[in-house]
Image (cartoon, rainbow, N blue to C red; front, side, top):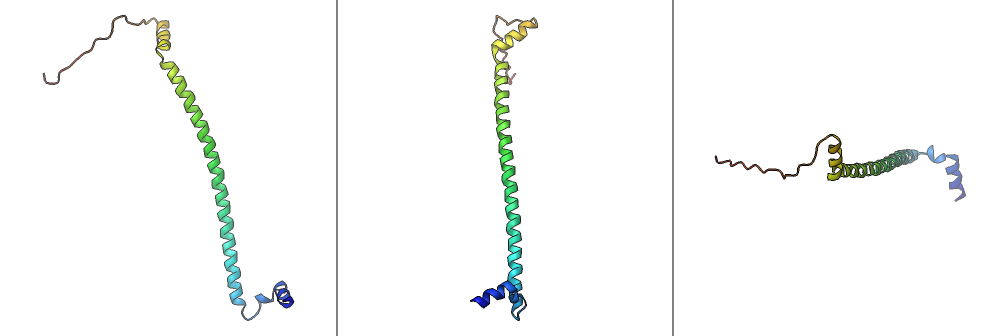
Length: 105
């Protein structure tokens, strides 16, 4: 047991006759480690981007609600009447006339 630990510490497992299989596993472990690290960085970047987009969605939604509220206020009949009254246009007392066109004639 003590000899095995000393062989690992000295690195003799890398220069033995069977070292080619050890090098294969070391390279495999190294490649998998690099893939895992790059995958982790990619996931972190995507999580940050998702958080940023969620914040942007909140801002856009609040801007949409504010704009819709302003539009509803501007479309109110009393608001339109007051703006037109300032320009000298008054509300008609007679209702509009409906024009009917027969397509057959």
